[in-house]
Image 1 (cartoon, rainbow, N blue to C red):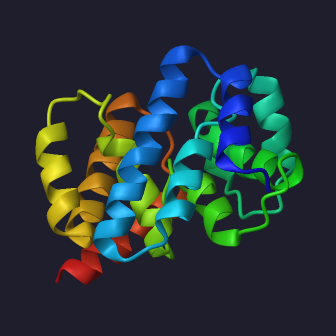
Image 2: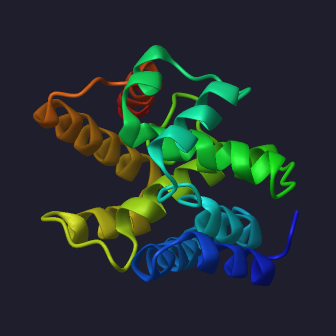
Length: 189
C-alpha cells in the first residue's frame, strides 16, 4: 500500500478540491476518534483519506467495481448508485493501490451503508464521515458531541439518521444497514 503522502497525490488527481478537503477532514476526525477510543490512529487516518476515492468517477465505472467486488454486496446496493462509491472504493484500494488491510478495506466499504458486524475502525470512519468539519446538516453539532462521548450511542443515532434519510428519499435500504440498526438497538438496551 502506498503511504499517505502518495495517497494524497492520488486523491488530488481523482477528486475535486471540495471532495479532497472533505476526505482530509474525515481523515483528521477519524484519527481524533481513534485516539479517543483506542483504535490505530494511522489506520483511521488512511481509511478516512480513502473513503471517497471513487466518489467522483463515472457511475458506470463505479458499478463495474461493484460487480467485480469480492465483498458482500446485497441486491439493494447494486440498485442504488449513491451506495456504489464505497464498494468501488474498497475494490480500488485493494486492487489498484495494493491495500491488503481488511479493516481499512471494510471501513471504506461500509462507511455509507454500515453493517451489523462493524469493527471499531469501521465505526470510527462511519462517524467521522458524518461529523467531519465540513458537515453542516441540522443536527451535526449534537451528532459530533455524541460521537465524542459515546461511540455506540452515536452509531445508533447515526444509523437512525441514515435510515430516516433514505426513507424520506424513497430509496432502498440495504440489508447491511438494517443489520447495523438492529445491532446498535440491541446494544443500547
